[in-house]
Length: 453
Image 1 (tube, rainbow, N blue to C red):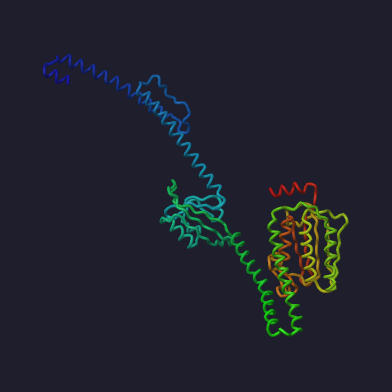
Image 2: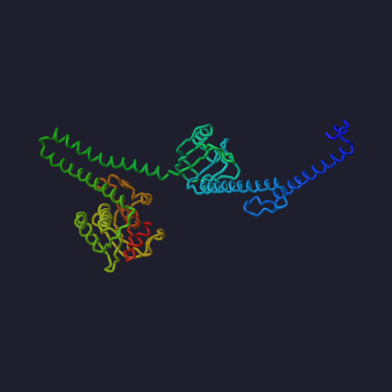
């Protein structure tokens, strides 16, 4: 503009040049100071600690121009805001990582390509993961699992399936797939959790077996009773001799059903309170003498004799007297049933140490051993003796009136008392059933409370 004015002779050329020089100098002074302030702010930003928003800012704002000073204050404010957001995000990430690590079941994160991108320690222990992402098919070679994973990755919200894993031992697992709405930074879009349901499946199988066995045990005598009732109502209506014979058989079958129902009710009652440790003081020696005397007549029918050995200073035990009476009555009754006619049954009580394999038991316990001189039990049957309805010789057991629940009741009563059962048997020689019980002390109540906690 100055040049145009000077060229038009509106102002002198010298005045135009002087005015231009003054304007250029003033502009250079203002812009130079602002550029210098921006350079200073840039260097100060470079010096800021990215890990600490509360640390001091090294830039002194006193020498800055007003716009630059306001810019620096805005930068510090933005720094504190973003640091706070960064801190919250880190805390959330750490919490999420802690939750994943603390999940008691195996947990896997899958990406869109069905690769495992992350797993917790439980999953690594289950399927031996490697650090780099790999396909789920390498870790779990099960078509049902892979089909469920593909369905979730294609868009399904969730899938739940049960499957078996045979390595390193057979287990039943439940897999739960769920879609993740917002993919994580590592690309995870789905989560897979594995739950070990082996014990649940075993419990279900045991329940089914129990119902089947109980039904079978009741069905047999019921069928016998119905058959004889129909016979007495029909062909043997006027046969007095058949009446006497059939009624005796019917009485035996009804007694068998009564014993079975009583044992089932007893077993149910014991299981109901199995978690509560008894607190009563029981004198074993008088109890054993009473049971031996009550069964002596039954033993005499088979020309057998019960020999009881219990020291006078035998310690009292912690327990429930009626339940312990049931334990020893069942064991001595079994010895009478399965011992040889004319042999001797030995019942020996003493104070001593528990079996070596029971490392968590008391240092001193009272043991009661019931020894018979029968045919003995083959070794392969010993681990299953306390199962419900398990019999070594089914026909002989039923012939003698056994329900198949006696040793199961013994086991659950001893579990209730935190006791132990040890079985030793030699085929052709006989068997020894040894019960270990906790000695009663003044601290028994406190110990019971501690165990329950």
